[in-house]
Length: 94
Image (cartoon, rainbow, N blue to C red; front, side):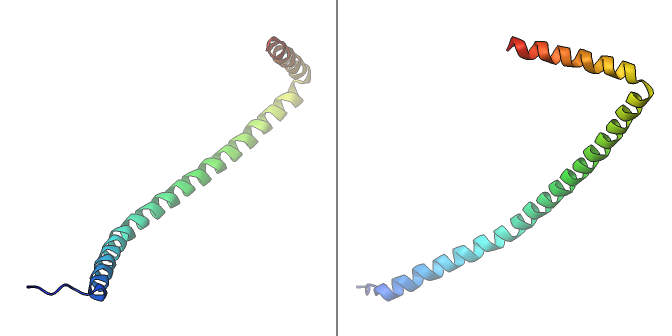
């Protein structure tokens, strides 16, 4: 008849099994973490590039509009009035 393992032996066996499981999970998680970090870095770079492009583009458009207004003040005033009238009529319908 086989002797029943003591609770201490069982606890040690369970702890050893859990340590192996944690070590195995850690080995697999390392490369996954590196991939996630690399993708996050690429996404951050892309977001920075997009923000820089948007900032540059908005400055160009603002400069272009400013130049147009200086060169054609009456036309700009007429366009602003027409746009205001259109927006006002659209907002009243709501």
